[in-house]
Image (tube, rainbow, N blue to C red; front, side, top):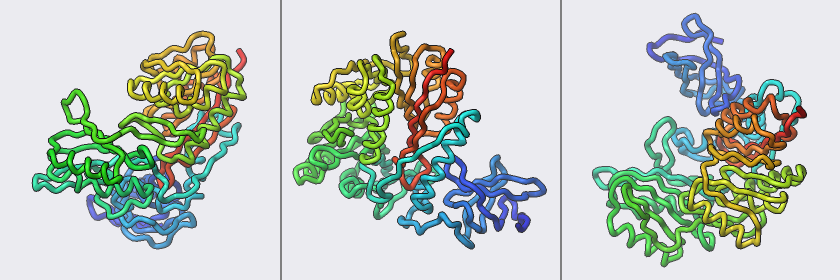
Length: 432
C-alpha cells in the first residue's frame, strides 16, 4: 500500500477497505505520518480499492471517497442518484445479501464476549429493497424567499436533501413526500413531517411545525383530502395546546394477525409491514414456548406486539408512556376481543410485580439501561428484548450477562439499504 501523500490538512491516499464499522462506514487502515490509523469511509465496501481524502485531525480519522479504482464483491450499482448526499440509505451500494450478513456480524460483535460463540444468530431477510417503506420522516425548511425544501437530512448535516424520487418509499408515501413543498408554500420556519398510511391506504401527515403556516396550506390539504390524495393531516404548531386536523389523520397498518392496526398520529410504528409481521410472530412464538402465566410488555406502543403476545401468555400487561398510543392500544385490543391491561406509565421506571414470569421490552434507540439493571436483580425467569440498535443492545445485555443466558438471537432486515437492523434476543434466567 502506498504511503499517504501529505496535503495539509487532508491526505490523499490510495487505500483498501477491510471491513464495515457498526455505524455503516467502511474501514481502511493506513500509515498516516508514521502512525497506523483506522480511517472510516462512508459509502465504501469491503474489498474496495479507492482514492480517498483523509482528515486525520480526529480519532478515528475520517475519509471521503474520491475515486473508486475497483469495487469489492459485495458492491452493487446504486439505485438512487442522490445516495451519496442523502443520509437515508447509507448501504445502498451493498447487495441485500451482504447487508444481511454484515448485520449479523455487527450483532454478534455487540453481544457480551462470553455469548458470541455459544449462540447461533439467525436472520430474516427483506422481501425486497426498493419501494417497501410504508413510513417516512421528512424534514422541511422554509427559506426567506418563500421557497420550501423537503427531504431526508443530508449526510452529516441537518439540512434536507431535495430529490426527484425516493426509490425506497411505497408509491403513496412517495407521492405525498413530493407534494410537501407545494402544500406548504408560503410557510415560514421548519418542520418534521411524518408520512404514514391512513384509511384506504391513502397517506396521512403529522407535522410538528416551528414557525407559521398560512391559511392556504389548510385549503391545499383539504383539497388533497377531497381528491383522495390524502386521508388526513395533523399540524401541531410550536406553542399550540392542540393540533389542527384536516380529514382523518389517523395512521393505520396491517397487524401481524392480518387485521388493521390503529396507530397514533406522530407515534412510532415499524416502516416495513412484511418484516414487522415476521418479527411479531417470532416474538409471540418465543413467548408461547415459555408458557408464562404473567407477562409484562414495556415500551408497548399501540399494541403491535401485544395483539399476538396476549393469546400466547396467561395475562399481559402493556406499559406505554404516550397517552395517544395507549388509546390506540386499547382500541386495537378491543377490536380483537383481546384481554390485556394497558398501563400509561414510564417504562424506564416501571417495576414488574414479583409474580411476573416474562418481560418483553422494545425500547427506543437509546436502549433501556435502567430497566435491565432492575431485571438483573429481579426474579423474572424470561426476557425477550427487541432492539433497533446493536451497540445499545450490547450495552444492555452486558448488564444481564451474569443473571441470564441467551437461547435465541435473530436479526430482521427491517431497514434494507441501511446499516440499521432489528434484533430479537430471548434470555432465560440462569439457575441460582
